[in-house]
Amino acid sequence: MALMARAYNQAQKFGADLAIPDAVVTVDGAADPAHGRFRLKLSYGDSAAARAVVIATGARYRRLDVAGVDAFEGASIHYWASPLERKLCAGEEVVLIGGGNSAGQATVFLAGQAAKVWLLVRGPGLEATMSKYLIDRIKGLANVELVAESEVTALAGEEGALRTVTWRHRKSGAETTRPIRHMFLFIGAEPNTAWMEGCPVGLDNKGFVLTGDQLGEGRRPLETSRDGVFAIGDVRSGSVKRVAAAVGEGAQVVAALHAYLADSAA
Ligand SMILES: Cc1cc2nc3c(=O)[nH]c(=O)nc-3n(C[C@H](O)[C@H](O)[C@H](O)COP(=O)(O)OP(=O)(O)OC[C@H]3O[C@@H](n4cnc5c(N)ncnc54)[C@H](O)[C@@H]3O)c2cc1C
Image (cartoon, rainbow, N blue to C red; front, side, top):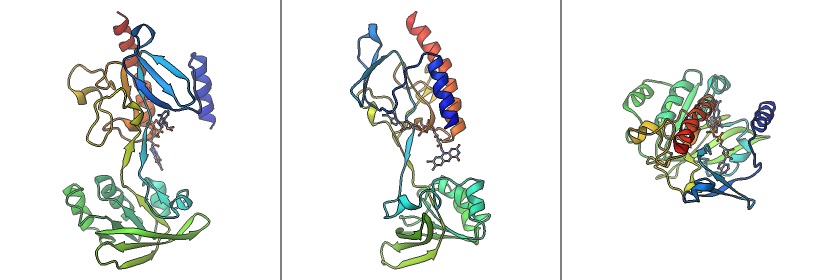
């Protein structure tokens, strides 16, 4: 909160207008150039004109569609596996859901401390979604068990602390309940780009915004397929999905904006 307050004060010092709380509902890319090339409509009815736009709307991490997820999110359900979470899992059974490379990396990482990692996927295996080197590493870990064609059906615990997780085999219907206090979700993220529909920019096959070199030569760093529209942080295709990376791109885009504004004024 202190950091946020300082950022807020600093932005005001530089003359920024802030609209909080508010959301951009639509962007029109064909506004009158004399009054800015973009017109942004805000949810409380205001609008803003701009010569350039920076998309920094992040991504929503997919959640599990099981009753009680909200209650356990603070302490027992994780969307991340850092050394902190790994320590929490020392000597415990954990369940990790997801079949992509990030799920594979987290499995290997957590298996170093956890008593057992149950790796749950809905599909028949990992071959179609995970790199072979990770699959081979996972196969070599005695404390990792792949549970294919299965999905979590129930969570139980009290006061935000998970105690058991139940999953069901999708074909046989057989249910398994294990004493598990930490569950990891690596089931993907969806970029917050719906508001850009009126001002389309190039996206990758998962809907994340393409920038710079990803679009071929001639684009500025962090610039999208549309002149004057930039993207930074989690919403950007290929971004690292870390706070430091998003903040760094925020600093970097300032230089790109200056260059763009200078060029477009010339
Ligand atoms: C559970 C969890 C744990 C994490 N742990 C770590 C960690 O330990 N270390 C680490 O480095 N990273 C961690 N991350 C990742 C990190 O949070 C992100 O990489 C980082 O926040 C990305 O910053 P961003 O500015 O791109 O997006 P965000 O932080 O997601 O910010 C985007 C903002 O845009 C707003 N927004 C969306 N649409 C609109 C709109 N139409 N109009 C106006 N505003 C809009 C959103 O409400 C949000 O406030 C974690 C992520 C999650 C989900």
